Length: 351
Ligand code: NAD
Image (tube, rainbow, N blue to C red; front, side, top):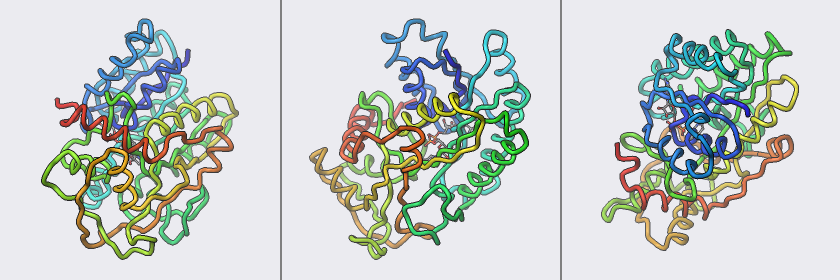
């Protein structure tokens, strides 16, 4: 049984990935400060699995702490290595709000880049050389025509995107310093939405949400609010921005297949786009949400947001070929499962 450390495991993508890993017989060690998440997410993962997995307590460990604290990270490796090694790390922990990163870039560099360097130092010290990193489609340049391939031009527009691209470069340098040792995979996510089909875990943004889907869920759950669509004059069919939405459970599955790929192949440094390859406009997303859930989302148009780009779509052929992974769930599933989570948990984890 392989042991995987999951930094940021209580977050949106992290919690769904922990569930998938545990269901597929991995042991999981979560490291999370809970600064943007709730420990209840992990209690819910435990709840979903306790009847299926014997002795889950020994297979699912949780450490509360900050990846910026080197001693804390070292102590977890020391404690774990008494009985077992850590076979790989999936590194989700970090800050992800583009607009906040524009207002406060230093915090983004400190947490995302500084925290990643700490993690890498400790991994190096304990000879743990297998890593999956949460990168993002935001690293691609808007000068490139979508769909983006892994080798498309890079050119992030925000400090957040800059930190992601910088971490990728650090990882490439580390790989090159010991190419016979490191197995590193950057997963560049497109737009993860939806929730686990049970509605027991889902996206639980702290404070006001920044992403489109939690905003739609909030409008759907309120009788009064309207959804704001930024721009109706983009160069797209209906004038609204197009994104590549992917179900969070397909993304979780993408992490598991990447892990199996890395652990069963020679040392390497590799990048994969995790998206569906299908573009959906804001209006199409709203319509699908309305149809599948049989409700109305009132919306108004407002001006374009600075920094937005009209079309972001993944070319996911490389992931499909190398990982034998294909997204199985469609936009209706994403809208149905996301709404199911919201109906069952109107206030998120409510802690
Ligand atoms: P999230 O905010 O829900 O999860 C991040 C987790 O990291 C949270 O649980 C948070 O408490 C934890 N964390 C933050 N700083 C920490 C620190 N210093 N020490 C320990 N824990 C810390 O975000 P998410 O949507 O699950 O995203 C996970 C990763 O994927 C992030 O790195 C994000 O940049 C990346 N990503 C997300 C998206 C998306 O749309 N959700 C898209 C592309 C990439």
